[in-house]
Image 1 (cartoon, one colour):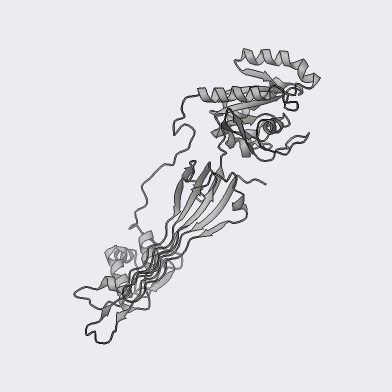
Image 2 (cartoon, helix red, strand yellow):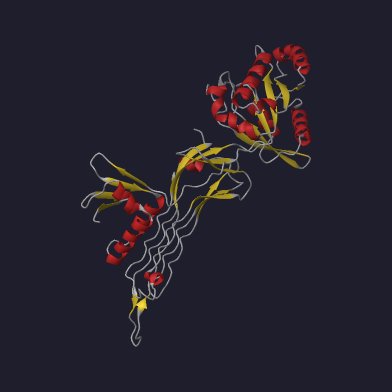
Amino acid sequence: MSYDEATITVKSGNGGNGLIAFRREKYVPRGGPSGGDGGKGGDVYLVVRPTLNTLIVFNQKHSFQAQHGEHGGQSDRTGHGGDDLLIDVPPGTIVRDADTGALIADLVEPDQRVMVAKGGRGGRGNARYATSTNQAPRYAEKGEPGEERRLQLELKLLADIGLVGVPNAGKSTLLSVLSNAKPKIADYPFTTLEPNLGVAMIDHRDLVLADIPGLIEGAHAGVGLGHDFLRHIQRTRVLIHVLDGSAEDPLADFHQINTELALFDERLGEKPQVVAFNKMDLPDAQARWPEVRAALEALDYEVIAISAATHLNTRDVLIRAMQILDDLPEETPDEDTEKPVYQLGEDPFAFEVSRDRHGEFHVTGKRIERAVAMTYWDYDQAVARFQRILESMGIAKALRNAGVQNGDTVHIGDMEFEWED
């Protein structure tokens, strides 16, 4: 089971309702509106936690809800705001809108956070609407509904050095030798079914290594296990290319893997590599070593003969990879990180009027649908205020131009109205 992709649903808290209330205290000759405002709904944030390295928690829980704001109280008391919801994700998490595919955030740094759903505004109480000409307003606002979004989470492991190669080349064994990782190891292809991370220490310095599942021909197109995990190599800066010295044609394997890397992402083919010619404890590998070494050095690749099983030269490979890593220029922020494209948001006052095959009218628009959800329909003054909103936004005029007649049905949001001009 893969723990590096997940789809979740998040919903911010609804705003609390504003209250319709009036003062009626003894010995107070002049009362008045005293309904308080509702509290703001809680926001939803994704927060990077360095202690996490998978998205496994999201395979068990898919829905997340922030706290709602409390309703307003009497004597102008404002309701308590809902608590924000913080959802922990591992470093290297890419967040997209699951419905549009738009990039929302690329979370890399510890404690980095991004708001993915904004809490609804609290409704205003009737005390907020008192004026010199309307001293006893009998309307208020309900709380604004919270936002609900489906998010696609994708994890790209943050590792300094990536281990690549064909299945059963010895990557997992090498990782276990070089680091504290304890991957599953067996003598058959595709032992590694998901990326393994390990931490190696050289001269009091920590290096993060990633063992990527074996790649086969066609991996970039989804063949075998490679397509799901190639993206994890994108963040690594140096590759250790592990060759199976006992294979029938190690050079063919080497070129095949590099081709798959370049086909998936051309930048992968340009990453510096240290070639580890593995299984030198076997006679077949020893016999092929001179030919393979000469061919790769002719292509300007640095190749080291190793045996992960007997630990021969394994530390030398890691030290050389670390030296190459240190010699690389400082990475620019946008070199390997996909950046979101910021666009102007939709006009909140925009709306559309349409008519279905039954002759009923439908009005859609963010602002007007929010006004419907925040209106107290049990109070005549609130209904009259909503009618003024229809006129001021130009919706009433648009409906008349569309041919609405008295008695026609008009749908706005979750409400159904009978039109009366």
